[in-house]
Each structure stands twice: as structure tokens, then as C-alpha cells.
Length: 211
Image (cartoon, rainbow, N blue to C red; front, side, top):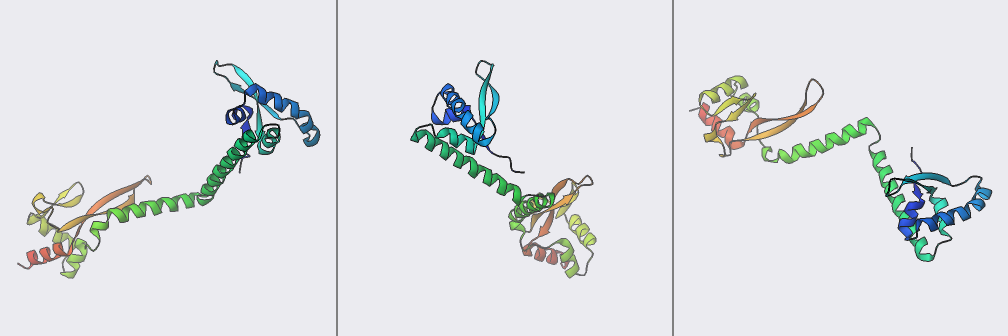
């Protein structure tokens, strides 16, 4: 629900450069006429001054504020009008942002879009790469067997739950890391990487197997 914007007499004093006591006097002087027409007084609240003491001030909506401003000079009125324009613009922007992400589904969708963009950016180097399963399939081999073969040949090794190239084969354009998103048992979103092979790496494996 959109909460109506309000401004205190203290804020009016700061915006217009008028002493707060003068603003209070103007409000009190105009309050009887407002009550007669509108049927209610202005809202009186407290604020804490620099000495830590509670002092009275008024809290006004836009209509009440601009009504009080009719007693100010042109420059003071202009400052208040511009300030209200800024407040309303900020409120509209907040409302628009809230509508864009109105439900949990919308929020999740937006989060997934952002994660997807980040994955695409990080996986650019892996574009056109092939998984070991695809290479094995094209060679009529089992992927597990092909991985074991590459380990035996000292090309890769099993490290922390995934296959990694041995240091002497890194930087030769044979393989890249590809990121993917997964969810833990507790529903936490996480990312991991796995090794994919470039066309050059695929040819290297083919030559190694057929040697």
C-alpha cells in the first residue's frame, strides 16, 4: 500500500531557510481556517533537538504544506514545490520497482536472469567446447573409461570432486572450465565448474587414443 508522503515543519524550515519558530507561528495562525474548512487540525508531533530535549513540530501532507506556503515569499514557495516534486518522483520510482518485483516468483525470476547473465559472461571462453561424454560417444567409448585413460596418461587427475588438467597441460588451449548452478539439499544456490574440451583438445584426445 502506498503511504502518503509527509513533511515536518522542521523540514520546511530547513528547505525554505526560515527559522522554525516562524514556521510554527505561520502554521498556528492558519490552523483555525484549515480546521473550519477541512474539519481537523494539523498533526502535531515531537522531535529531539540537539540538546536531547523533545520539541513540538507539525507533520503535514502535501496539500497542507502548500497551503501553509501561501504565506511564504515566492522563493520559499518555489523551494517547497521543487522539494515535493523530488519526493513524488522518488515515490513513483519506488512504486515502479516494487511492481516489477511484486511476488516471490518475480524476485526469483529476476535473480535467475541475473545469475544466467553472469554464467554466460563467465562461460564465454567455454563456448564451442565439448564434454568428455560427447567425445567418448563419438569414439564409441564409455566416458568413465576415457577419463581413466586420460588419468593413466598423466593428462588429468581427480581433484576435489572433479577432473583437472595436470599443470604441464594447462595453458595449451586444450580445455576450459564451464560453470553451472546447482542447489544444495537445504535449497542454497551454489556454483561449480567442470572441465570441457576445446576442438583442439578433442583432436589431442583422438590422437592419443588412436596412437
